[in-house]
Length: 533
Figure 1 (cartoon, rainbow, N blue to C red):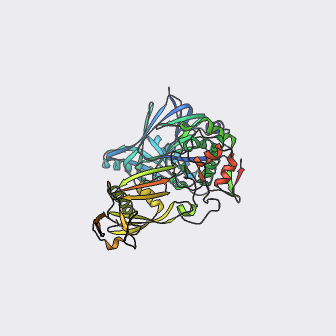
Figure 2 (figure 1 turned 90 degrees about the vertical axis):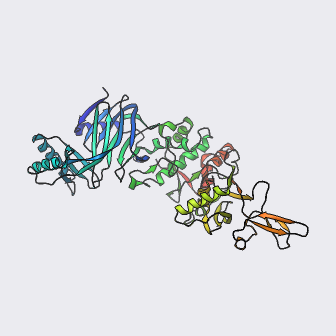
Figure 3 (figure 1 turned 120 degrees about the vertical axis):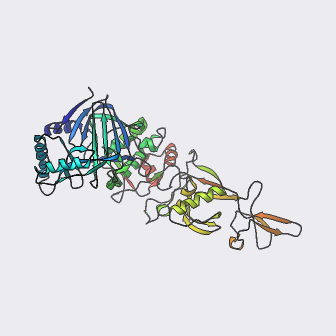
């Protein structure tokens, strides 16, 4: 059979299992880290890939042993019609005696069982609070009669909550439903942790460590969290962030940058129940599925090494391709300068597929894209775009600020806004406008000669109004010149934010004989590689 269902785990068993499940790498200096894999989920399929796992259901204090033949389905069960349940409690756990009222809930459950009723202890977090749920009724009157009968046997509160939604846990040998109660938040639904070593399947990927399913604050969905030692986490980060085919010295630099980033940003999403997420908002993490031999070797060779600056963990931001030069951090995200996050040359990046790039857009496209982002940020639409004027560039040619000129107004925006609005790979970008097939836009210089130019360099749109063209009369001919361009070519360099280490730059330096420490000190000048465990 797939599972051995255990009710009320014996403390000695928990102690013995804890001794077995601690990995060799899980030292105090190699802390467990919680990674948010998915949020706002309404269902999850989890199976055991390798080894044995311990399934814990905190809501009912139940547990089970799972092996490789076991699969679980967890889903939010939305009920079109509310049901009703009688609840005894809450038994609030407070003060210096943390188990006093939990024991009270257990005593109440025994009393309920002796009365001939079946009840479930449900644990709520934040205080924590324990209640006993008894029965499930479709009719509120029937539930109220039962509540009054039960109330005679208890001095504490006996309440009648409405049950609308809940979590359904399905297994080949059992099925359990746990409701959400009105105005009472639940937290962890289940936890699946390894009995020794093992691998779990969730979605299309395989993961080391344990998986926890947590309620979201809205109680309409849940989130999936992977908890594991940080060194095991990095095994799934480095090959997700850098090709495993890169030079080993570049991979070592990436390993140290990723480890330092994880430790520096540990707990960033604590309020959401995890430390980091699995996307580029933190670091890309694809679990055991992504693990590769060269990346693993780079992590082994740099085990416990981090980047320090003046005794503190460094901010080790990194990106794919700088285009030949990185940028000062304050020019990208604002704030104060950081002495080691400054613009440096990255001379060996031409092999990157993102070293140079071109994006072609039409007037309707660029107008829609820019106005949509303006409005989403609470700003007014500027109408049809007439021009994009770069006002300031950084230490590299990255755009810091630009002015968007429209027929209904102007807007001064950041380079990051331009990148987001137009879906550019980088803010290292230049714009070339034309007036349509076979046409160019011209302006007039002081000597009345017709001069080819990018739209807006010399032209004052305020004097043009809504006209579609300007007529320039010369001695021998008349030239019709369109004011409203039809197409723009955006040419640029690089991919990413441009701060810190360029991954393709690190590869180029490694191929030119640089070791990982020299690479890191080039992209983060003034930092020191230190082994902390």
